[in-house]
Image (tube, rainbow over all chains, first blue to last red; front, top):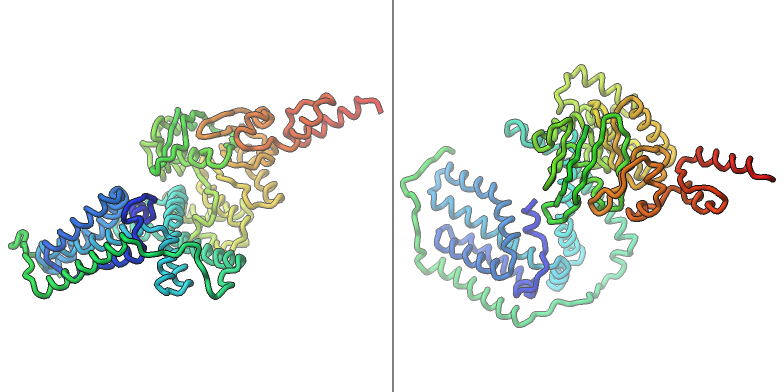
Length: 256
Length: 274
């Protein structure tokens, strides 16, 4: 469940918390540029920058939880790349790409209040229905996580042993947990829709907000830094030689 | 016998819920665990079948520490029925839902068939054998949740908030049912806020408050102790309240049972001159 905590807002007062959610979204999305690179050096550099950011805003505990949660998937990526004939360095690079991506979005959600996110989306002309849908989904993640734990407890009390049997059996063991979770989620969303309508949701076409996000100095500086970095990353890819490192170059297996 | 020795429990989030709880529950007992919201009632009973392991202290079930046994092994002996039935149904039919636990515990298909019939009859669900559990009413779901556990005949039956959302006649049926099970020798533990229900059942009562046991004894003694009951954000049974208001007429506020109250009042009326 640590994975969920890594995507849940944690109150603090740092430069990243103060940053405008739109610029922060730009920052997180700019990390997607790691898709331009398959070399180890730039990827390690990116992850190092992220680690420095995480340390400076006191979210390292939750962030580590996210990485741990993604651990199984990372191993899967590594193994799949190896057995389909990639080099060790390439497989590690793919894992790094994945880690950079999940930690970019973990950073975003850890430092952005769901309400601010909604306000920012609205400011970006996203229709309110959609921004509301998004922020509600984000807000319900912890609720779902707690509910999943209760369901697991209830089924274990009926003799279900989650970590017993071969792989197929273990996958099947999730059915008694996933079905009640799904059914309850659907039921809850219907109830929520009714409750919202009872409170006149959508009665006014034009909504006004109590607080409107405004760009501050930190936002202008950050967006400038982000733009320069993005331009440099693209330029470097096109025109500069990227140093390559080959780890265990003789190691090569191909199964699939 | 369940023996709880000075257990403390802190959730991974850092919230401490149990602060040194010790209690012994013998076989054949009928126990009600009461207390305010967040007092640790559910946390305590989740320790009985090993879902939670104490941070400090130990729990012995028939002399074996719960840390040494799996949840499945303990659940075979100690059946825990959760508060919300919607947290456990996933099968297509009521019958399948009952069979789930039995299959997990390795009963033969023949025995399973027999036990399903038994559980359906016992809880008056016979007409719904092939119905989807999701189509049942609130009260029927509660009964099915009870049936899914009762079917493997655990020695101890724990019911978490069995009376929530039930109308009076359902509650009365449930009360009769619990008393019948208990008289047949089953240990029954109920976790509840419903003081009137407990007063009518008249079991042994344990009151938890802020992770500690503040009272333990027969219902008649515990529930008529106003200070203790208030400390746990509960209100004494209405019968007790009536008698408290009549103390200047010579009554004592130690009655929880309706029939006993009636006898006392009749007695008073017959004694007093017209």
